[in-house]
Amino acid sequence: MEGKYYTVVECQKVQQPRLAAFMRATIKNLENGATQQINFKPNENFPDVEVSKRYFKFSYADGNLYYFTEEETWETECVPDHMAKDALKFDNEQEPIIYTFEYIDGKLARIIPPTFVVLKVIETEPSVAGDTARNALKNAKLESGLSVKVQMFINNGDRVKIDTRTGDYVERVK
Image 1 (cartoon, rainbow, N blue to C red):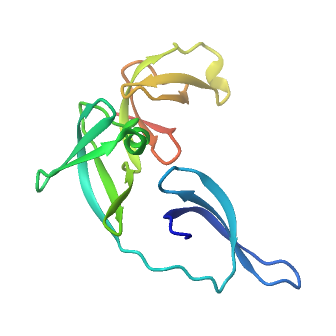
Image 2 (cartoon, rainbow, N blue to C red):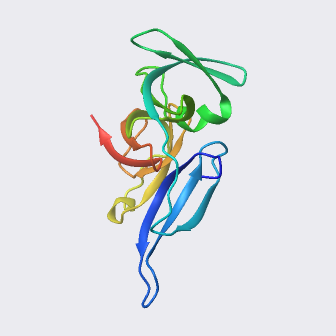
């Protein structure tokens, strides 16, 4: 749209009485990450783009550059920090995760972590008797440096599943 690439974050069809229906969408600019809400007419068209995906593991960081390696070909992809930082907040050194690199017309558009990751809790407050009666949450720092709200029974050393789309705690993992 207008020479820039966007992804749809959320959309809904809006039908008002005696007016033409339209689509209300929240879109995200893939270059700078800015989101905006926009209305589309049903007959609006956009040019087709070629979308391809490749799968990489994080290798190392060198200043403001992050290097990822494709497992099959051992090809290395160098990525600036503004593209990699959000995805890397879920990475851990014990179990490297595989990232999906999405290319639009041959250009890297975004790095997508897996939907769920398992991380170890390295720091959290101890549970206090009586706090578990209500659905209380407490802060926990994870091995990747991410801070999340977890349930009161989670302790240091526990492994928890995190939803990378929202950054929220899902459940404790054995």
